[in-house]
Image (cartoon, rainbow, N blue to C red; front, side, top):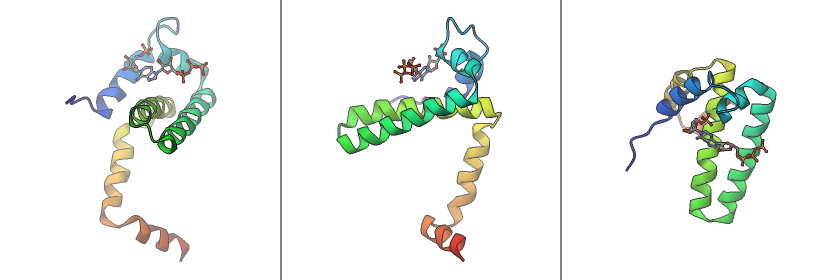
Amino acid sequence: MSDFTLSDLEEIVADRAKASPDESWTAKLVGQGQQRAAKKLGEEAVETVIAAIGGEKSELVAESADLLYHLMVVLNIAGIPLHDVMNELARRTGQSGLQEKANRKS
Ligand SMILES: N=c1c2ncn([C@@H]3O[C@H](COP(=O)(O)OP(=O)(O)OP(=O)(O)O)[C@@H](O)[C@H]3O)c2ncn1[C@@H]1O[C@H](COP(=O)(O)O)[C@@H](O)[C@H]1O
């Protein structure tokens, strides 16, 4: 079992963003800007949805990996540390999603 974490991926993305676009997909995508990176993230999200509906577990694993990687690229371009996202998730642990939805409506 790998102990590779999203935090490790965040570091790799930050490091590779500084590489030559000829050598690195990350650097190429970062160089193309947020509009292109976000579009790519959207494509990967759709591919993940299709894999989830398709029911092939290995496909869903592969598409989920693509999705998380491209999310890390988008966060990198936006200058948002993964830590901020984890803090937001931690903040939400006190209440259920149903409770949060109900509070939004009132
Ligand atoms: N996890 C990933 C990762 N997942 C997906 N991808 C790349 O994302 C790209 C998108 O693939 P698609 O087939 O969806 O898109 P495409 O058709 O090739 O591209 P377009 O025609 O849409 O432009 C591919 O080039 C994949 O290789 C990734 N590229 C990099 N990483 C990580 O980033 C590290 C550094 O990679 P480089 O930046 O390329 O050195 C790697 O060692 C990995 O750890």
